[in-house]
Image 1 (tube, rainbow, N blue to C red):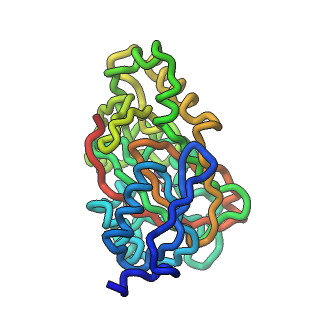
Image 2: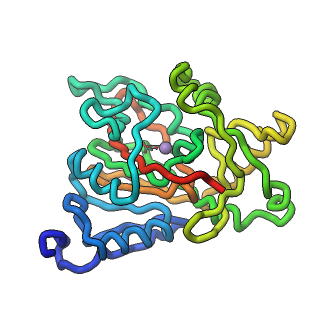
Length: 290
Ligand code: OGA
Ligand code: MN
């Protein structure tokens, strides 16, 4: 199977954990060819353990990007059809660059500026999101990731007891309103009616518990509305403290993937009039949180 091993020494991918609460770089691998089973196993294990994986210097086509992501499960397009790739509906393009090369002047998706976990507004939220970066901002536009399992482990027993068994309602409509994005369309609301998920999510592979909140979480139906909103906010503030974060500073042609079951993420501001920032994203469908 020599055509599978395009990595320099032909050996297995190398996992280099970051000096942070989560994340690792995977080197000695090329994602442009199908991974061998052995290579895939190293990546898959590192993915669950480190939660965020960074592959540097991977100039992929959209088709190669799709093929790599598809190794992790069935793909799914995004509810927000305007950002879909014209030819490949499972690729979404977040970009402030127009066809003529000038900038639009605004960040393409305000929902990514706030802490969230992808597609938590559907019954079976994304397992992983695989992003690549054809164009990056020179200042800002970093992506921050929080380890929500580490944050859960540090909660005091009282708070753990308080949130055990509680569910939050997650809503695409409400999260659009919160960030001031274009309102959800009637079609989108029909496609993604509000859904309830546990605030403490158990990882199906490791059994570890993590805090599962973020901007799509609107309120807690079993609590008085404002009290529930406040509790969600407190949990988010706790889970996104500096000590739980990895900050990704993008380079052109990074490929980055994360486990939406055990992390939250957001983008830091950049000058969307001056800087050009484009990411292509492919999302793998996940399971119902429990
Ligand atoms: C996403 C997202 C982060 C980024 O693709 O889900 O939140 O860095 N994007 O653009
Ligand atoms: Mn996201």
